[in-house]
Length: 248
Image (tube, rainbow, N blue to C red):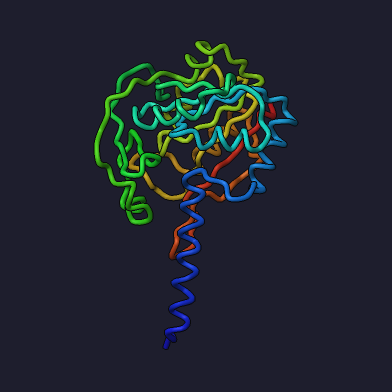
């Protein structure tokens, strides 16, 4: 029989896990994490001086880079109008950080994006049952028609040098399509950071093994992993961030 005290302990631990997950999920930083230190070392080691931030939301990732000491150029793409407005306010005053009101995908198009209640879970894909279980605020509350371009087009438009560029993708299950639109760049990008799901959180998304194989076949090696989000009850890792560096 489980004692009331043990149940209280379990509840407290679950609450701690939930809070930690939410902090990580929002891209907030209570203290500088080991992963951010590792990422900055990778950036320094490989001479990366620019970042293309796909799926920027309100600029959490870019702010984390600045806090970690990155002084180079950041081009942050966020198609949601409300989120982009906050992103634009955030980058104001930073001459090396630009806010772009576009999504990235396999080709130039116009698509409907599902707007989640919490904004940062918004996606072109529909949230799966597991996603709604662990993140109720991922529920779709609206849709918005947004413009989509490709990574290759963004690199050309903003005069980015792929050999010194980190491509960061946080597209809520849409990472595969973003890579499909980076066929030219993937031949020479210095590094790629993207979200890797170990369970289906969005309908139709590619999972960890498929993404790992694709990037490995393109000449990239996994250099860093950040355990991004785990199930608050079971402890199962559901997604992580991976940093891949070109080695071939």
